[in-house]
Length: 205
Image 1 (cartoon, rainbow, N blue to C red):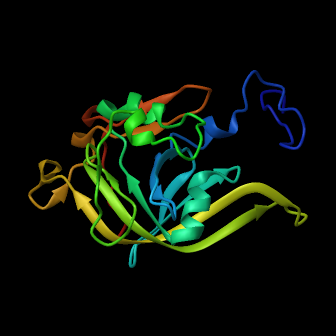
Image 2 (image 1 turned 180 degrees about the vertical axis):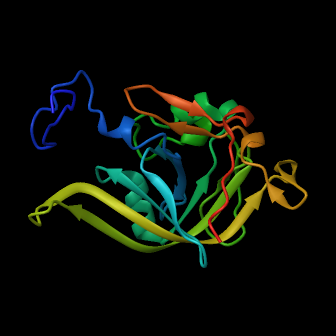
Image 3 (image 1 turned 180 degrees about the horizontal axis):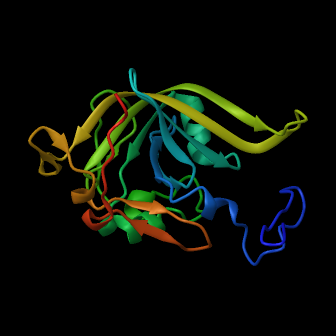
């Protein structure tokens, strides 16, 4: 079909920018805080993140490259996911900088670490929602032929949830009021969830 662009991902896609992340998107941002065995905090955003189970809730993110976050989760078995909202977007972006392990990304981005209740990693005080998590599985991803990739996926059970009550209305968390942002495709695209984009559908009985 002449109107279909086809390519094999192991070869050149023939476009100006890899389209895969734009197609599977926008995606929630995994803004992950951890702590190392020396007590040093780390905070970094990950474009590959989502929730995969209800009870108990299980979230997962993947790191392209063996980074400080992966090392810290392996060492402590814990991490915190922090919701990125539009007012926090620029500061989240600052925490994506490739800095040395001793650099405190909280301080770098002007954010406040606040103690979690059940895990050792700090939460982002400015974030309206945080999940305290205990790792359930850490695995290095592989290709179809079994060859290892330089990508690690971390799954964690959510053991504690913090929600700013300003975003709970009549017992229901209001997604749009918090103004979460999502990662789009391209080198710099993000999207904000707003009330104007809302529509509803009920599951068939």
